[in-house]
Image (cartoon, rainbow, N blue to C red; front, side, top):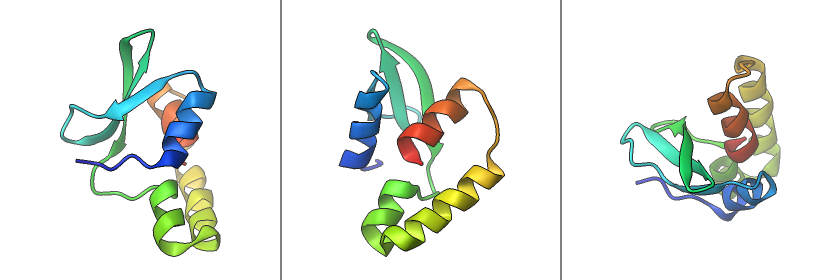
Length: 87
């Protein structure tokens, strides 16, 4: 099971959504709005900004964030929440 860090909870709060560990074994987080699941984000097996920040430091995490944003330019709901909650 994915360990959701405070960074992600804080970002979700800013977006007015609730996050919980995903019930999908291939995803990290389920996102809820008005008690309805609206998205599942974050592939298991890949790291993310809060974990890089905790384990490698801000400079490394910022570099990984930049690379993530270069690779992921999608505009769907999953991409929107992944970029704002995990990156």
